[in-house]
Length: 193
Image 1 (cartoon, rainbow, N blue to C red):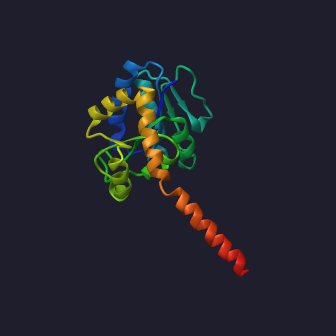
Image 2: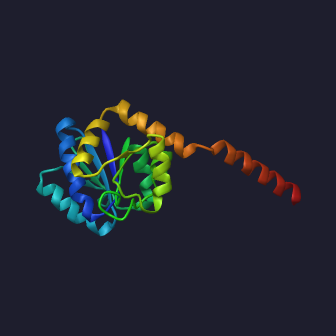
Image 3: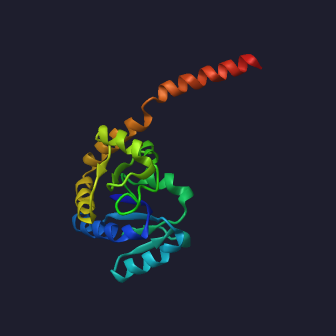
């Protein structure tokens, strides 16, 4: 089933993600949104809103599982973020649309195989977004409508896979050189001991 992830979503961007998910559900009725709010105390308000819109909601904090009909899976433990990046072929990085910048490093999602959607505000992650942008390895959106259109486009597995592969390539670039350097450092340290 198609899945996307909204990572570290601030309250100011909840409407944009709801709009995008609503639009994407019209194209893919089985679509699941995994949502990690910026603050765990927002989970109940988000769940109440989604349920008021007749969405099927499951909450990780209550040990609920996303069933086949679940449209929103609320997660609230940032320590599990790697799991959600791995499960979701597409990730929207919260804080980048209307905040001061992405609240999570885009290289986390890139390294774990998720295609990246982000707003125009990079914040402290500007250099990482620059590298991803230069490699056409992330997709920028400027508004809630843009986010909805990008989600609709990336529901196509081949498109999200191409974006994710490009992002993974950027994230892993230089890994061989790093490994060789670590090998030499270990060898030097082992020889000195």
